[in-house]
Image (tube, rainbow, N blue to C red):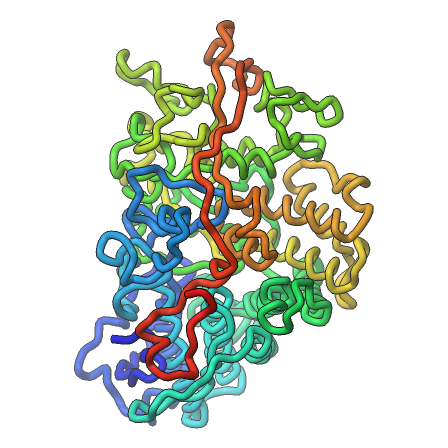
Length: 637
């Protein structure tokens, strides 16, 4: 079935209300359809209980990109590299310029390897069947059907009607935004299209698409509460409303939608100018400012997590499969089984020599780490990492000493102790990360081809000896779609570019662009933005970009950031490199690995991605662009 036809599919399922325990579990009993569950529209939409049962299915249209397959690929910029064993993954194809690979027809392992697309629009409890493209169109259709039946909700309070309408508007705006940020302007479908009507919905410009999404998200923010627990309807599921769509989520995506519209790529698509659109940027800052003012005045349930609990943003362990994210995560997908990340995804980071499971490994690229993770004093590394920099204190003989605090929370480097417990004597040599050239943790197939390993999403005990994979350890990984730190950084970018000033700020929030970035740096125990990076708008914008790279590393933002900044196809962002070096003879394992001396440090290019202008937008499906002439293909594809 052609994917775009999901906007015409008749949605037969009308679920009786069985409010999901969204904050604590992901039970989907209400989706187990029986003949009696197909009921009349008058009954289905009569009251809040029934209408919410219908609306709940939309939450199951949010793909969990973290667990979309046994090993999952979601970082497609210059930030991450997949080992040769993962040649079926989207990341491997994108590195070779094959952007068709996001589509199920061209994705590896029979279409299973892409979280962006699957063969059908499944709202079941299997994350391997959920793809953004079909589910977004399905969700848009379902949201429109609900909005057109709001008048049938006669047995309800004003609060209940607002909750239903707000959720439906959010999802309609969110699904559209998730699509057009990747492929450019699309038809904005705000009505139920008859199944027997010939499609003639033309593609809008990016700005036109963003304006339509902004209307829905703004209205949703005005209708929805900050916290469902504080509503009469929400008290029926008190303490289990954590994932329900609220005002903060709507404001966050309103701001993000407007910032993307302001960005050079989207502005170029709409106006022909490769600069920021100041109007969209200012409006974005206002949306983020409204959100951040609510947060900082204590009116929300959201706050930055303490730095010593930073990893709980991404995984929990020994907490009975509790949701990760803490108070900082604003938007995330459901998960449907506590152990679904435990036996597969968490094994895709450490080399096969210390873990069992699939040989596919996703590792940080040396270029991304070296260009962005600077020194603890706030200065970047020199462009040539073989040269010492007296100003920053960087020393190529001690390249892992004195680095940004988030370097140590995000990256495994040579000499770090990985295995904590006992090991067979013949395996003792693998207790420490042997990431030097020729070390046991290196390898193009099932080790690290780059000389770095990702530790952001897994504890050190995620190895075959400490066995954090055991069921009883309850290791659960779920990377968020959007968290509060991202909002601060997007606000800084929008305020800077909207007001063309380092001291730019919205009218509804007290902090300037610089002060917003400093909030994130202070949480990480890093110094404030240094004066030399505040000398001009362009200089500070580059510092914001570096801060985004460090704080949000490997969280699925880099690819779209490089695209919207129109840097994806420009060197050095087309390169993926490895760090090569030898351990000094006097090096002794077991002490402070940052103090280990290395020799012959150098960087080696592994891949130069053959990208051109057309790669700024993903190609649309041939089956969709041939439906009717108005749904045109993206240039170059």
